[in-house]
Structure formats: structure tokens, C-alpha cells
Length: 255
Image (cartoon, rainbow, N blue to C red; front, side):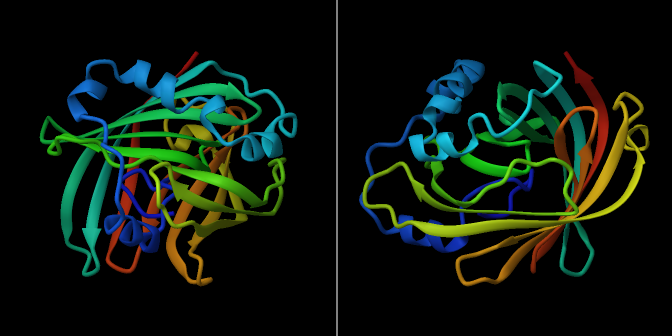
């Protein structure tokens, strides 16, 4: 698992380093993905694209979420370790309800009106990523898809005071090295969800979360809110040793 502009990636830094020296099958050209972004999301980040063992652990364990699609627009501000602003990014996020708490997502990220990165993923309640891929607009080829191959700890979310998810992740490319990762969250205070954006219904429950690598070391801290009326988590801030992100929600549309 690793930090990104959206905060919900599944790959660890150690695994990325291992992949860099491995022989890989030819990556997918960025242009071919951009020609049909929604089609690529549907064909590569659906429940059927998850390993059978991962899907079996989740199927039937969760209830039905009350939406088909959600469109979220937000502004993310990045700061370095000294607190200096180093970037401001606009995020256009499409979330699709895949059933059983699974959500596929396409996030398009731009700066100064120029798109810089697309992130494709499928995960559990938009909290624990299960499969993801980054597509940089400056690169001829897309990054490698990384996926959970096994869940060591999974319990359906029902509003618990604390939650913990753990799994083993690897690249879909050959010769990849598996790496463990986990997410742990603790419940905090509740606010009206409209305080995050007037269009968000119900109550938002704060959760302080941390990503932990295979060595048991915390790599990222998150401030999340669980939207009770919607059934998903959203991140309002994240922090690593080198930088931090904060997010302001400018639009929220649910259908």
C-alpha cells in the first residue's frame, strides 16, 4: 500500500522497488486507455477481476449500498514536511457500486487545468483498496496493476469503534514479489455530513486510520469520515513522513 494523491492505493514502496528490477510483460499504452476510460474501468476493475479467494471473502458479507453511482469533485492541497504548499490539484472522482460493499473508481487529477494523472481502482467501501493502477499523462505506458491476492483479516464494516483489514498484494505482472499491507482505523466524533459538503446527506463519523507495511511500520496517517447514509469512507487529510494532503469537497452528486 502506498500514498497517492487520493490516499487509497494498495501498493507498498518495498514492492514497487522490487518490481522495478523484474522482467515485465509489455505495459498498456496510455493512449489506448484514455480512448475509453470508463470502458477500461469496467473491464479491468470489476469484482470479476479480483482473485477468487479475495472475492469469496467479501461476497455475501456486506449489505446493499444505497446508490448506483457517485460523482465527487474536490480540491487537494499538497504540503511538504515544512508545511510549504507544493501543489494544488483538482480531483474528479467517479464511484460505481459493484455490490457487497465493493466500489470501482476512476479518479482524474489535474493541476492548473491540465490533467496529470488517472487512478483506477476497486476496493471495499472506498476505504481498503484491493486492486489499483496509476496512469500518468506524461508517460507513454500505464503503471502496473497491483492487486490483493489474499485477505488475512476481513470483517464486514458495521460501524465498529475500530476496524482492521490486512492482505497480501502483488503485481499482475510475472515475477512480482508479494508484500503484506494493512489498514487500521479508530472511531472518533460525529458531525453533520453537510459540514463536508451541503449535498452530502446524514451523519459523518470520523475515523483516524493508518496504513502499516510488511514490517509493521506505520507509513501513512489518514483522517477519514464514514458517511452513514451513503455507506462509504471519504478522506479529508493524509500525512506521510515527507508530505501531507488536505481535501475540500466542492461537489457531491449521488444517483
